[in-house]
Length: 116
Image 1 (tube, rainbow, N blue to C red):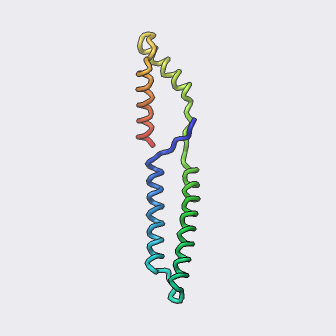
Image 2 (tube, rainbow, N blue to C red):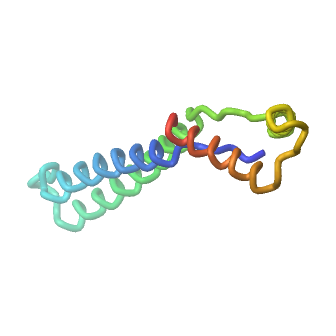
Image 3 (cartoon, one colour):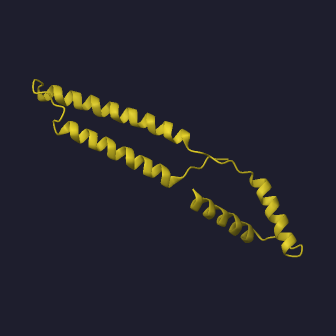
């Protein structure tokens, strides 16, 4: 089964990290770190190296963050069997339709999304 992660949590983390890097690069670009003895060409090379390293480091850190996200394994066969058994018991031996099953698991997904 595929691993699922909380999309909102990931998007928030990416946005936070992107804003941090943008502010850092703005400070460099605004000459905050420009040494007066450097030529513009030397400064631009430093800026390019800094930007490259920032992107490389951020991608590595983002991968590490994604690896820390909790993934919950689910036994769908067991859940389906339990749902069908409970449904049949509650409905006098009648088995659920495909629509009933789809609705049940859709609602479970919505509930899990709210918790996540």
